[in-house]
Structure formats: C-alpha cells, structure tokens
Length: 233
Image (cartoon, rainbow, N blue to C red):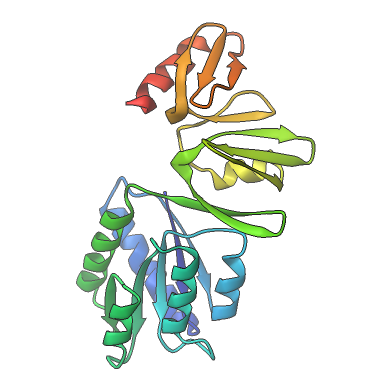
C-alpha cells in the first residue's frame, strides 16, 4: 500500500490532485493507497513527526515554506521519498532537479502527464516501504519488511528488527492500522509477526530469524504454515 501526502494551499487544487490519484488507482486495479491532504507546509511537517509517506504531491507556492524547501525537509527524513511537484510556474525546474523530484507538472495538470508521473514514482517505490515512529524522543524510520515482530509490554509496544528494537507507547490496534500489510499476522493478543521473517514453523512453534520462538495457537497451524510459504518465497 502506498501512503500519499498531497500539500497545496488551494483546496480545489488539492482536491483535483486527489481526483486524479483516484482515477490512476482505478486504472491500476492492484494499486492500494491512502491519501491525506494538507493545506500548509507546517501541517505536513508536523504529520511527518509521527507517520511516514511514500509519495508526496507538492505545490511550489504553498506558504512561507515553499515546495522546494518542503521537499528538502522531506528528503532529510526520507531520502527515498517520491516527490512530484504541481505548480503554475516553470521557474523551479532546476531546483526540482536538485531535490531529485520524480516529475514537475505544470497546472492545469493533464491526466496523461499525471499518470506518467505516478508510473515513475510507483516503479521507484514498489519494493520498499517505510514507517516512522518515536522512541525516547527520537524519530526512527525503518523499512517495513525489516520488522520481524511486535510484542506488547503493557502500555508500550516493542518493535523488533534484526539487530535492534524500539519501544513506543501505542495500542496494538493503532499499530495494526499503520502496518496495513497482508504479511503481518496477529499471533494472539500480544504479538504480531512478519511472515516474511519466519525461519521455521512446526505444529507447536514458530521460529523467527533472530532466534525468537513463539507458540503456534491451537487450530491455526495449517493456515499459518500456508501463509508462511506464501510470503517467504
């Protein structure tokens, strides 16, 4: 699933971009996405403190932080972000190139040009998706596929990757909403595992890549083993 941020101080332009995005998704039947609209650069920057996006559709003339400066801030947090500029001016081509924008669209935006831009950015981002979260006051950004499992520790949740872990204050449901990927499996009320990171499964236990072992809930082995085979190869 692609998480997409649209930032334009003109609500009609933001709505137009959202409409083109919907048309693009309908044409590409396998594309799943969530889009969020922002009308100031500060609102978008604030959102980036606790959640991540894969694709950004940015106006150039937003407010006191223009689209180019906003893109630099985005790239500082997520160097793999796909950025598409949408503007009424052609004065920023060189600046857009310097921040490695995927495309530069001039308003009024033609559907064909928008689809071409989305083709480019989706091809760039189709393999890697990231998530951002806070741990002890610091914002961390990790690849979703690198997360092996999430365990509940009272009001906190521990997100475990191969060589480290992060403890964040959150509910499991909030994290499940964020980890909207089919290969994350709820293994009881206190644990979610990444099926891509399963090393071995038996009728009694499931072994993760870091050596952590979990019990297989009764009656789930057949379905769970089939899912492990599906997402491990």
